Length: 287
Image (cartoon, rainbow, N blue to C red):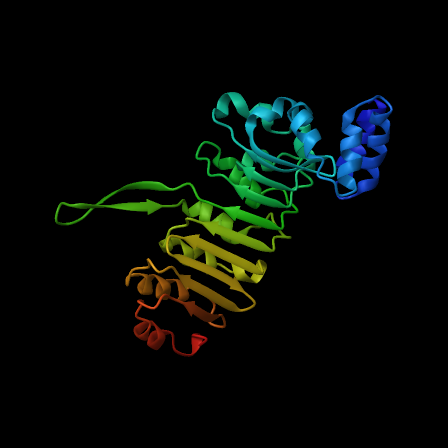
């Protein structure tokens, strides 16, 4: 291992500490490398956008073509959006790439996040990927990780369901194993915020009703016209103005799966008929 490689390892071992970064900056400045100036400027609060524009792709190396967005902080990559259009060929070009070792916030497939080198990762926006289901299971139930915030969007399977009259309806399904792993989140002991995106209404009650609220302080769901945020013993449910009358039934089905001690705050538009749902919820509804 060279001296510069050893200095980089010190940065990866303490990603929240500026001192190793500044030591590395001094070393590369002696070699005339502009990365040293970049690190120093960013550690002192300067975005150094001119250097990002000039050298950013070079610093990312072979990783650059696979990032649709990236943010440098304190001289190293801190936020990244990874896109892998052809899994069989491209995954190895990204998974475990050294430039990702300082990433604090990642948007991408779980297979990138679960690599052992991703020790700085705290916020993950999982991109659905039906080709790598084992990566999702490993994230939730494998080696414990230090994630504090997880944004989840399921792989949705759709298909027709026949009716007795010979017609059919289109149904949306999420794997029961996937939902069970999410509700348990056994490998994420430090998780403090879970945000669900586009989880079908029929699945929400299962996720919220499996003891998840005992482990995660803030749980949110964003799906269609209904937004839910559960925190501090209160479930704040907001209906968009476009919500249909059928939404009241969905709300009740969801509330029935919540622990009885959780109060309900309901925000609706002026055209939504609240009377029936208020009567059903009774004392659980905070007015």
